[in-house]
Amino acid sequence: MQDDRNREVSQHVDLCTYIASIDNLDRAAQTLRLELGKTMEALLRARATALDGTSVVDIVLDLATRRGGRDIRDLTVAAIAAYEHAMTLHRSVAIRALVDDAGMTFSEVARLGGVSRQMIARLYAQTP
Image (cartoon, rainbow, N blue to C red):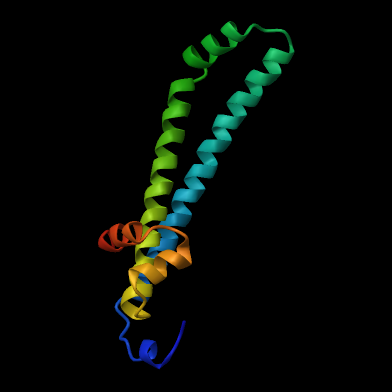
């Protein structure tokens, strides 16, 4: 959607802000991968224990009391929330670039992203 009109628009979204949003998303994704790995490691151990004949009740009690089940769950849930937040911030920076720098309307950006115009407006307003 690049034309002469868009080339004349000054760059409002700082390249450093865009790169920082990607770096933040990368850190959140790394943390999420780590926490999901811990979750799956605990669950795969539980699966192996179940296949060895241990009752589900004993496995769940063991996970909850001795294997840090709640901490594992809470850290994973927090990592998911942090990832979603980082993704939202990255999307808001990208949307601001499309609107402010490329001269696209909210409706055009919404069609491009397959979301509502209202969602684009909300994300646009959240740009740091």
